Image (cartoon, rainbow, N blue to C red; front, side, top):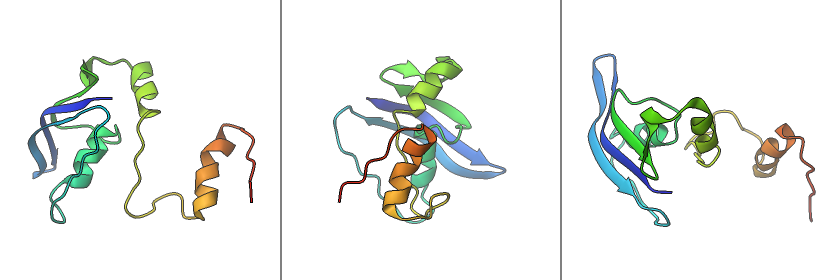
Length: 114
C-alpha cells in the first residue's frame, strides 16, 4: 500500500512534535526513518499506523484521504497495518505467547510444531 503524508503536523499543548511532514512510502518498498531521540520518528509512525491523530495535515492510503474514510474503512485499514513498539507496552510474555495472543483472541486453533 502506498502511504503519503502532506503537511503532517502534531502539537501537544504548546510543543510542536511534527511540523509539515511531506513523505511518500511507496508500495513494495522498504523505508528507513532515522534521527536523534526526540526527533519525532515514533510520533510520525503513530500517525501513519492510526494510533494517534494529526493536529494538521493529511494522510493518504493508496490515494484515499484518511479524513474521507468512514469508521469501517479505518478499522479495515488498521487490520493491515502492523506497529511494534520499541519498548513492550502490553505484551510482556515470550515471543511465542505474544505471537499467539491474537489467534487466541479470535478463537483460532494454535498448533505448536516443535
